[in-house]
Image (cartoon, rainbow, N blue to C red; front, side, top):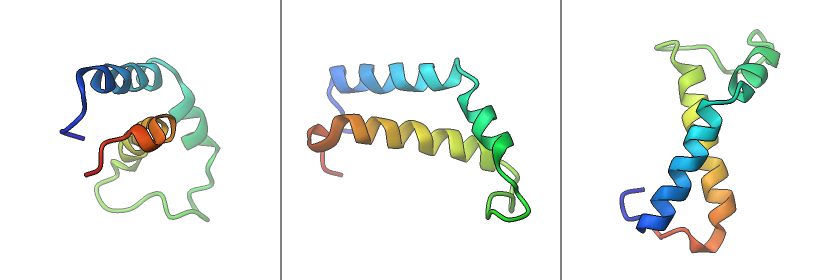
Length: 70
């Protein structure tokens, strides 16, 4: 996401801040049964990866076709 316009970068930053300032990641992460999901492995930073991926997913979804091609 290096080639975003200033406005797109600002929008992404707002999404990142909204996710970081909410408890949605904790609610979803704690709702998962990690014995039946593929969520705990390796470096045990999966909840952080989940948060990052959620931010990117939301940004990509709201930007749709306006998202620059990588």
